[in-house]
Structure formats: C-alpha cells, structure tokens
Length: 183
Image 1 (tube, one colour):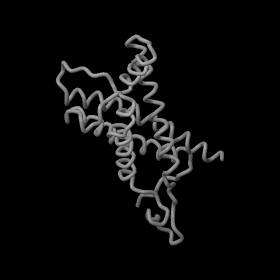
Image 2 (cartoon, rainbow, N blue to C red):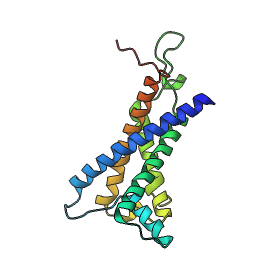
Image 3 (cartoon, rainbow, N blue to C red):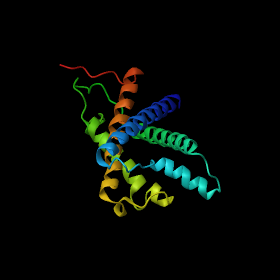
C-alpha cells in the first residue's frame, strides 16, 4: 500500500511538472501561431469564468487566472497519478542478464508513453465527448478554426513528454528504478 501511494504521489508531482512545462510552451506556441492582437484566456481560465457565472459570481481577472492555473495543476496532477498507476516499472535485467523487452515486462520507450499520454489527455479534453465541450467551456475541436484547434494538440504532446520524463526521473531519484547502464 505504501509503495502504491508513493508511486501515485510521484506521478502527481510529475503531472504538475508537466503542466508547468506545458503552460510555458503554450505561451510560446500561441505567440508564434496567433496574431499579436489576439489574446486568449486559457481553457482553464474560461472554465473558472463559465462556472463562476453559472453560480452567479463575477470574480476578478486575477482571481480567474489564479483559480484557472490551480485547477489546471490539479488536473495535471491527476493525469500524472493515473499515468503512474498504469506505467510499467523498468526491470533491470532478464535472467539472461540483458535488458527486458516490453513484451516480457520491460518499460515501453519514453516517446511511446509520452505520445500516448499526451494523446489521451488531448482526446479526453477536446473531442466532442471531452471535458471542455461537455462543460460548455469550448466547442469540440472539430468545430474550432484549425489555427486554434492545433494549439492543444501541440501542448498536450509537450505535457506527455514532460510528465513521462519527470516521472521516470523521480523513480530514478527514489532508487525505485536504477539508471540503465550505458555501454
């Protein structure tokens, strides 16, 4: 039980790290792909604003930004913990002394896990049945202009890479997963 909780906590921390990296990348991606006059609030800020309006509240812009970022961090932590729960730990060697393949219990390649995590997060949030359309925050990505719909695709790829990398690094630091020998 204790090891399971540690695993989930490491995943949550990795998810928070991935969310921070993703948020920074989003600023750069938006700056590079949208006209300078087009400012956009994040989906999470919009979520807070929409939910507050439904509750008859009108929070300040700074309160919306803070609550939106906090909600995004918490959501990223949940995805990181979910990833940790399903990620396969690295076995250091097989009985023959060689690294195991994924087919016999070894760890999948980092990019495979990263792309998978990013894709699942993206689909769970932006498709017609995703969280954001279901809550009335955004239309599904299929109904948004392509220049806007592609931004979350890119940022969730960044989230996947950052979260999986951070999780694997945390496992090495915790000595749950000794580093692979090179050479």
